[in-house]
Image 1 (tube, rainbow, N blue to C red):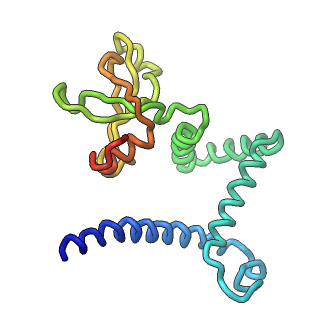
Image 2: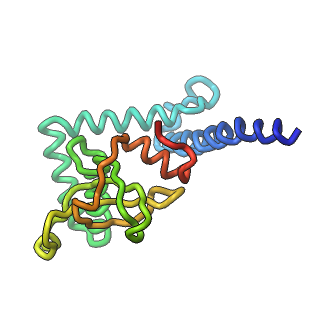
Length: 195
């Protein structure tokens, strides 16, 4: 009886958490309908709310903004908008930081999470998985003797926090593992081993 109960939990808990997270995301995106005039909202047009309509609208808005920003006029307007934001004291530092991080993470030519690596951490006799993010730059590289690489070591089970390390390339072993597989391995605390 206990075995059947635990098996049921193993099946239902991931499903319930997935549905819960999707519900929160779609509910949050549906709140974007608050910016749509009342006469264009689904409740007015068809007589009832349509779950997920806000999510579709948000995706459509993001796509149209991306489409506009990719042409010459849109690119010019975007640069003017960024100049304006950089002149506002508090907004300038916040927007600049978020923009740098998002450019690094979402850029197709960015350096974020290029390769999964195995490194000795926190001491020489224990190892952890990290992600190669590039090479040290600026004045930092002037003070490092030898060939160094930048490595991000995520924490388990929450990979959004972690440690940034600059390590000698000779101490970093590149793994034959995709970044997705390495992240699953880290988040599952080693339970979901890569194939």
